[in-house]
Amino acid sequence: MEIISVTNRRLLRLFIDFPHSLYKNDSNYVPELYISQKHLLTNKNPFFEHSEAEYFLAMKNGKVAGRIAAINNNIHNQLYKDKAGFFGFFEVIQDYEVTKALLDKVVGWFSSKKIYHIIGPTNLTTNDSCGVLISGFELSPIVMMPYNKTYYDDFLSRYGFVKVMDLSSFLIDGIQLKNLVEQTFVSKIQEKLREAGIDIRPMNFKNFDEDVHQFRKVYNESNEGNWGFIPLNEKEFRSMAEEIKKVVPANLVLIAEKDKKQIGFVVAVPDYNQVFRHFKRGRLLPFGFIKFLWYRSKINSARILILGVLKEYNNRGIDLLLYKTIQEKLNSIGIYKGEACYVLEDNKAMNSILKKIGGKEIKKYRIYKIAT
Image (cartoon, rainbow, N blue to C red; front, side, top):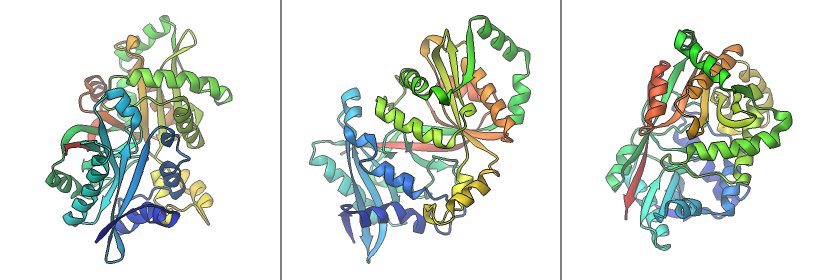
């Protein structure tokens, strides 16, 4: 067995494709789109304008047996001043020795940079998919959420990694939520917000630039103080917004406003994993577009991707009203269930709101740390 660095297109293709063989007999596995993964992992991603990563493959008997990324996030270290490194894109066969070799390689890579505190997995940052699934293996992953083998938690723990944070996914039943929000207290909240001049509207794609400019400010400010949050610069946020715009209807991006100033938001994404599971090895060609149109019409669930409210407007029920409104928009296109994720275990306010609207925790993910 040997650990090699990904140094060319062929090796990058092996790195991206490895999960397809690892999960080939797993009915819950959904392939990531190759084109999206390639964009994420190369210099087309604005992340690499300020930070760096190196990718490694474990080769055993001439075949890929595992993969991992070592990620040096300079923005994180400037913000948190903890001199931490990150690992991500961790996938491995059921062989602890392969896992140990991959992690040793990452530890060595960071040691050469005098970094001895490692956190992960993050793919590439906490704004992307992150964590190891530790419960909910019987369920298929919803769009842009991780899925992994059951032994990952054991392998990381054996190496010396310990829990730093758990994150949850909550199932939202649209019919149950509809019945709940018809109760008097929600109507009163809505009435009070209207009296205060607070309205909710869909994003205006015709005025996309201005909406995105304000949106980024609210996104960064509303998440400030959340564990591990990395604010996005203008280029990074625009890149994310452009990707969302390609697949999310404008009426599933809702903005809360007061005096034409954005103060909150919610974004829901139809569960395109119900489409992508039909794309062999994540390739769109040759018949991907036809498949996409066919299976898109059959999507029956969604992910509540992000929700935030400026801290000075907390405890007014804006978040509850955003949930209510986005659910109505989803219902109008025939979607009556979805998942709200990620939810940090220490985010008491969000956990409380989700339980109030009948949310049921169905999956849990874990982020780890180790001092080397």
